[in-house]
Image (cartoon, rainbow over all chains, first blue to last red; front, side, top):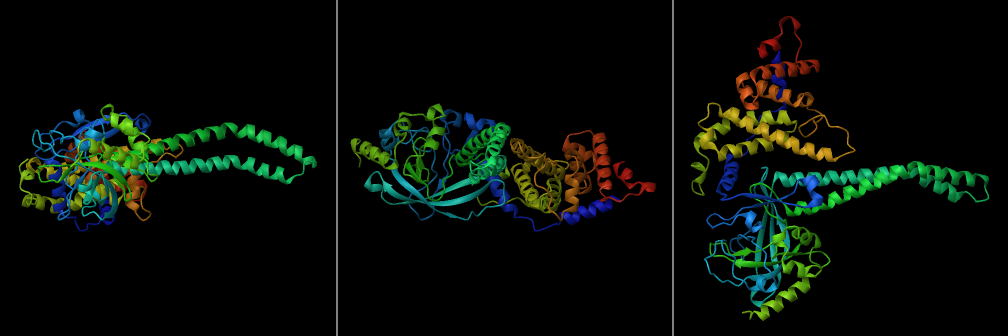
Length: 353
Length: 181
């Protein structure tokens, strides 16, 4: 009877405690409250074959007059206020500033929850991501993953010397797919490397034999001949494997970058900060209760471990014409310290405060 | 959307909570069996119910809301499997993977292993018919296929499971044919 099947299925899918509906309800609410969700593909040639294009999603605030992401070429770096802490807020991105003067001095971009004509000096600081706390929502395909505290480590202007912000990023199943793809490509690389080692093993063994055989030994010439034949025989295979390895390595680099730059889905971040990352950011105070806005991605810069501005981020950013501002061009190859100096000079020229 | 636009403190409405209590195990079980993975099945089931929450005003008025949430879940699982399939295709040196949908069966999971060995279309029909207890008509609606196709796939799926020993063979009084009819 199919009763067998029903019983077997029941044994394999035993009932268990259902997760709280309230969590799903809240998740659904967040999606519904979204005012606009626009998707754009960014042509990233090397990643396109695997990813089909970089996807950025705009998730503007609830009541702000909202420019379309496709117009602004912008996306959010999610950050929120930690109750009781100074500054933070919904750190929103917009079009990048044209130059250093604009980054340190321009008015809050229009259309992002600020009054028309408002002129608010941004807080431009270098921050360091300090720790990750466990997320309180887990198990959903779209979920908070990281709760990061970022501390101001260096201000452009002394008045901005202190402050803590809390940065949150959403992870989506799309992000998880990216991570899975990265892991698989890494395994492929390991596998190809093993194949290369295996294909080269006979040559290595012969080399060892030749090294151990005196040239005067009659066997020496035979070994040399055998090595030539082996080399010729395996050359094509080894070349193919090397090419395959290079291909996988290139894919891996793009995936690793993509993992950090794109989170698709209903909520998202366009860049996922990690603990230890340093960012140079411009924070704009907003008037809608959220304390600051981050204007970028043209106006946030990632400082890599060597103290240089992340070339990968800039390279990808340059793939979007609207993000390729004179500031991006000017800062290419700069260190974080040099950019801070540039911004300080710009602030001084603007009169500072 | 009426309910979703309520105040920040508003929780799910009572009829949604009742629907969830009634359907969770069934949907979760279907997706666990369909995907072969408890973790993935649960995750997909949660995602399906998030979508129910988003559209509860419409879902509550449906003739068969349980079938609808199954359809969402199965579609999510198939989409997930397709994405994984794309990744697998990138793995040029890997042997072809039989299952269309994700995780390999856990060693102890006899029925899941047997189900994963089925063609994905047959697996969907078998799970929906014999786990979710949907009628032939409902399965046809969920999978957007003719009822005759549901019957055919049921017959083929059960035959494969019978060959695997999961379903008893009783040739003189073939209950499978009864089920299919």
